[in-house]
Length: 129
Ligand SMILES: [Zn+2]
Image (cartoon, rainbow, N blue to C red):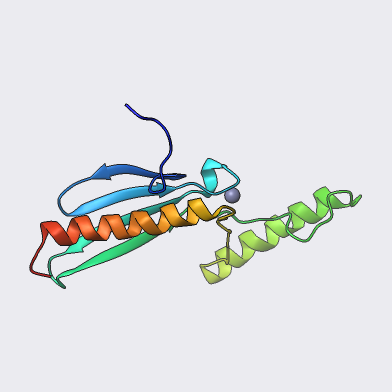
């Protein structure tokens, strides 16, 4: 079996596939597994369309904006954690964001190819769409 990466799977893994849904995982260019994006293509019988769900773990970053060499780094970090926890407690939400990097053209091409491939497979198995 050929293990050589192809355009359609470079840093994009097909994890599971059924008649009604296909599950891919995209790996961030930095290769940190915590940064990956789960992509689920699903055939929606009610709407007669293929849907795409993107899921990613997000983390609150208490050290954002604090210089690591700052003498008060740990105090500022703890203070940011307290502020975040209080905001979550009082408002019920907290803003978080994380980037996902495409640093290589072939990785972006594989991402696009996976979406097109998944949609085509689902549309082929549900010809009434
Ligand atoms: Zn990353």
